[in-house]
Image 1 (tube, rainbow over the protein chains, first blue to last red):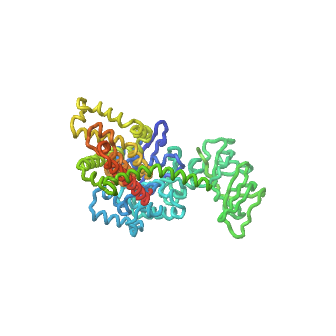
Image 2: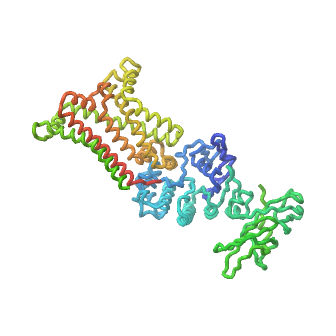
Image 3: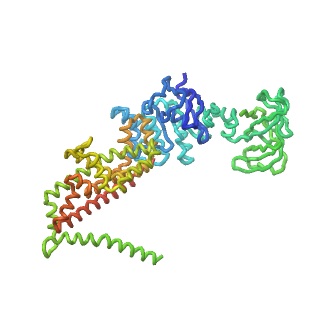
Length: 353
Length: 262
């Protein structure tokens, strides 16, 4: 049985239903990210796990125990907030010790555990500092130590990196993942940043309008999006409108190009419209490029972006962007030029709404 | 630009003269008790008066009790309004402003009608009861200042997130209130306390009509019967108020020095 189970969770605020039938099972020690745009319900689900909000319907259980009737302070959950939420009147030591003191631990036990936690976040030399004497990154590491000190059964991270600058964000997310792995603590991470979610998670839940659109490993989410929303939200994707030619042969037409898809077209008939997707990095312009399929079209524009060159191609009224790595002898395609983009039919995804 | 500056200085000078001349005059007069020379005889006379010590002590005690009762009432109220009932904020603000628009004499007559010795709750039936009623009256009078100073201090911290952070670490309401919230709004609490202290020390209407031996009625009594002592008392009363205001400045500056924003 899974460690953290969310079963048919619903949540309404007045007439507005913000979480609609959310189901999820998380294994012990797993790092799961909830990814989605603002207002998709990801933070509400997290707050229901914490006990700050009660589900309108459904059950939350941790280690087989139903949490619905338990108050926040009875759940033994650690949480790191976006705004750090360190107690301004306490120094680092007292902040980390807070949960242990509340739990009635002995003085020696508290001292040992706090020192252990501060060593874990490499801030043992700042035990006497007050929050206002520390940088944002340091404060968030203290908040992490404070959340972990009482040995919670689940760790919740509510956009903990959003208030930090880009460089600190990257180093801290790696540090969080490293600590999580070392302690083996079940972690739920909420973010709207896809790079963050994809880089540190075992599994990602892409949420849209109160529902989990897709749950999968970062690679599955990126390479095999199952809905149009996931496809458009995670990474850059070309959505191409195609016309079914022969459903039995799985062939579709894009402009003048007829291509054979690997994935089954399903119940569609010849002449029906179909949305297919292609990642910008999937294709190549090289004559000798590997690939069993190609699309020919006119170049609309081409831009040098440093490490990549992004070219827009018009194929039967569809604008297709594709990226190629920069090399010193690379030549930018010219507008109006006719080009053939080669790729594998396997790279095409059928978008089913 | 220069003309504007001149006008500003003229306005400040007129204001300062308007405020300081009577004060200097009062102080100068308070030193003239001994004929022909300046002396602190009037102050000596005031400080050696047993009634001064009794009324001053009484008012001071009442001020301290008022501060404690007021804070126990206002800090949790401001906290709950901020955390759980933000829609009630206009109502609470309106209630706390009422003592500014309803004269003290109207409030005290209302109390006397409601809590007289032949009413259901006969507060005025005993000395202890009247003292309790006087404390509540003072809390009412101090409400606009106390609520605002505490509420302003709460605005500077993220009450909701701090509460949630404490709650998820296992803390219950008393711990959250006294270890996480109270210490972080202490500058507001102290500002409110000093304003309350100044108000209570000089209050006349409620103490006089409830017939309690407070410092305000004593000031009036001395003013009606003596010549130099009332001036000395006026200077003392000003000193108390200024001391309170100075302490407010001090605690708010102290608060600014350790902002510790979450």
